[in-house]
Image (tube, one colour):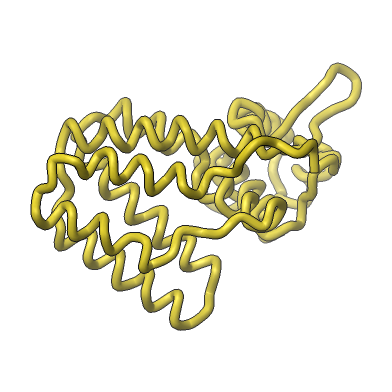
Length: 207
């Protein structure tokens, strides 16, 4: 881990853990020791504890008395529920406001470039940015906050790494942009179905 230099420390630490979950440093069942993490990051244990509590709220970390924090053993059901909530939020966002097509085209172009370069991390990042543009356009800060609290980027990485789920492709976003361009009244339903198409089926036990 690189030392955390900027504040707020809690947010920096949370992002560090999220990055480590995404890249596979932390695996399901691994114990996260507050004291050890604080020493690695050069901070006190308090902001580490706060960051882990926030990640517990995301259902990525679990803790128990006298046992500390561990990375949750995630299930397909966990992932499916995240996609269901996300799909509902984005469909609602479209009802509240429409994104600028030019902005969507910009994100889509970057997504195509990342796909051509074969960089999965950038494909996920630009795919999430594309959808964030849609949610921001709703003009509803509460909706955006709830959407961002889902930890979509890390859940996407985990779904690919743990469950071999496909990631959202550049080609899969083209019909969405076209629907926004023609101001299709059914774009909200199209968006919802687009997202649910990546949700896993019935759970097959814990990984």
